[in-house]
Length: 159
Image 1 (cartoon, rainbow, N blue to C red):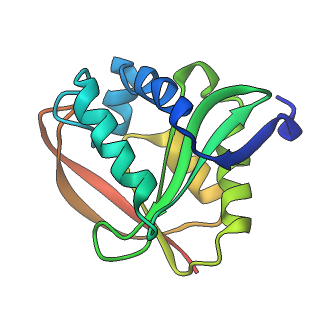
Image 2 (image 1 turned 45 degrees about the vertical axis):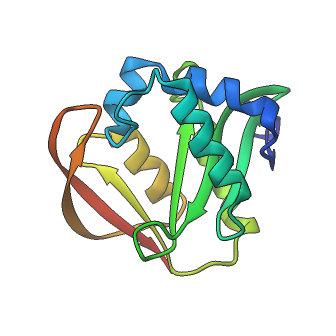
């Protein structure tokens, strides 16, 4: 994958159908674990995303591979600490896109420390976060809608 082909830009309304399609993927939901109760409910999805886009406390960027919308990366304070999160179209997993996008996002984001959470068995996302400088600082448990049960999470921090 040509790392130069990965770009970030502000999210626009036209990106939302792409994000919705990405999160419909059952394998992606399983891996992310912490998803919407009903990922097929487009009205709830759009309401959530419009709220995200309007919140000045959230920085969110669309991930582009060439001209294709392949995901998003954001930081928020939903759980008390500044935290980074991202979602990537499964068709580009394992190609370095997440690492390139997150690396660029972190260069543009001065917020530190920045936290991240990843479900224990999501080795790909854990690898991305660690490549970008995040270190493991603890664990937690949470109810994962996509799995219908409690799961263990790894908590990471970037100083």
